[in-house]
Length: 173
Image: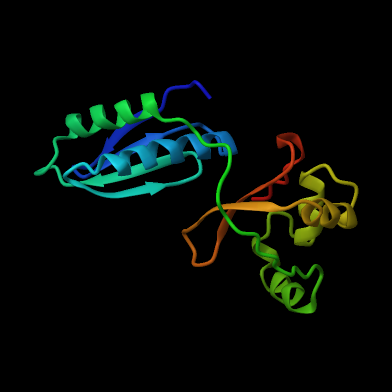
């Protein structure tokens, strides 16, 4: 990924960095490399470094580090950052129920707000991913491991990449 990162300031205390227009493992690992390099710099005035899937944000104290000084330092970190292609992590197996009565009951309560009120979540997910039916979706969903890159917005909501070729990755809004 040789595309330069796009930087912008948010209010007086945030530097936002857009690594890519779309989420990908490549963008995630590039952002991780840059944010780790910034953390190792231990810049006076940097308060938080927050990595996301295709971006990162740095909260800083402008009384301790000038915005342009921070931007120059982060660009320097970007120039020297090398994205790792492996992680020290752990594997956690999570049982998944498909078509269980509890999820189905909840699903039916919110039909009027569903993307397609005439279909179940599984039917909708199979269709928008170009799969033949629910069974094909379940096989694609459970047939390969997933990498959780971050948890956010709602407690326990994982942002995940399926460890398959990009064209086989499932996407569901």
